[in-house]
Amino acid sequence: MDDGPEYDSDAEYWITAKDEREARQKAEKKYPGKTFTLERDPDCLDTWFSSGLWPFSTLGWPNETRDFAKLYPTSMLETGWDILFFWVARMIMFGLKTTGKVPFTEVYCHSLVRDSEGRKMSKSLGNVIDPVDIMEGITLEALNEKLKVGNLAPKEVERATKWQKSAFADGIDECGADALRFSLVNYTTGGGDIAFDVKVMRSWRNFCNKIYQATKFVLGNLPEEFQPRAQAGKTGKESLPERWILHKMNAATKSVNEALDKREFSRATQALHQYWLYELCDVYIENSKSIIKDGNEEEKRSAIDTLYTSLETALTLMHPFMPFLTEELWQRLPRRPEDKTKSIVIAEFPQYSAELEDPESERIYDLVLGCSKGIRSLLQELGVKESGAAFILPLTDSAHATAKAETVSIRSLAGKALSTLTVLSPSSSPPKNTSVYPVDSSVAVLLQLPDGLKASKVSDKVKGKLEKSGEAVARQEKAIKIIGGEAGKEVKEREEARLKDLEMERKLFGECLERLGELKL
Image 1 (cartoon, rainbow, N blue to C red):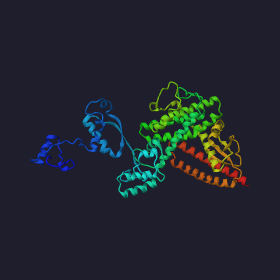
Image 2: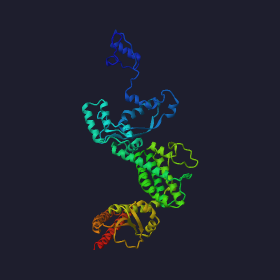
Image 3: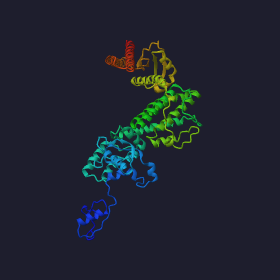
């Protein structure tokens, strides 16, 4: 109004109209005889209306720009399920109305992050976690100070401070961006909620360190002028452990690609974690140490080539989830001949290869892993810290052949407390002063009782195992009767094989108890 103060903030002096002509008519009717000036509000759209225009307004629309022609419509929108109606639906409606096209072909709804108590993260609750604080670390005191900077009421500050003390008693350790990203993706389960826990974040930081240490080991064992083979396939001369890790690498590659195609990102991270930690690090790298140290030149070269291939693939598969760590480590790898790729970002993503599929190696190597696991278990159970004497008792000719051929692998995976490992024949009688670990119906491992350990003490443990084994046999027999003729052939064979393993386990525990009983006498 020309004869009054500024009224911009007073809703009484605002006029809503389709255009300036209609606005003037309404104003003249509302303020007859008054002199006024009309000014159009430059920003009259609410949050969700303006956000609904985002897919095309950011590309120069309504002008036919190059960006609009190239980038609209896009492929995927990633968002939270809680704003499907407020934002996603509006973008689709506005896109169809103004351009005649849906702005995206796919919507991926991520999970909602909640605190460790399951509450939605909210500024009013003071439980919002700054991602930078996870990446760089922060003390509890600094977290408390952040609460005072905001506009929380004193009572809310007190309540939030108390929560921070219980959730982050020691502050938040520096975890890095990759651990944070991998943790959140690993949490994701089809749009469900994420209960954020800093302890989980620390475990993924440790996993990042495991990846670094594994890469450091491989690089440290490459010959000075090492150049990998031109192709990552098999040579036909691979040992059983090499065949096994290449098979597992191929299985992980298949699982990751399938999970990514189906947008099951959590399943992809689980497959990667399984391969990196439990197959590459815990098994193959440990297995390769003895070959690199004591093998002949051909064995060493083959083991190193396989190490390189399994690591190169592992880093590339991991890259979408841990871009910084994998780029840094990948840059340190020697490149294959003719490979001019400058960054892992543009490296070819691993694909499943039928050539590397080798279920037979997995079946055979499971015996190696079972034996080494059994030895480690007995060493721990009997408190043997050094000079352990173990025996492998094959119960079939094929198990005997595998155990003889893979003795070095079994020893390398059994732990430093093992001193001697003897492979018995299927017809051999077990040494009397030994405890037993049944692997399956084809093989068992035995460990000599250390000096000073009473046989009666071991007998009590074996007796308990025998009782549990007998109960397991009874349950399995009952289960087989229940499924009867309704189950398919594959299910029946699997359940009968399980019963066979349990019966052998019961038999071996019983024989062990008899041997220990003779020692007591």
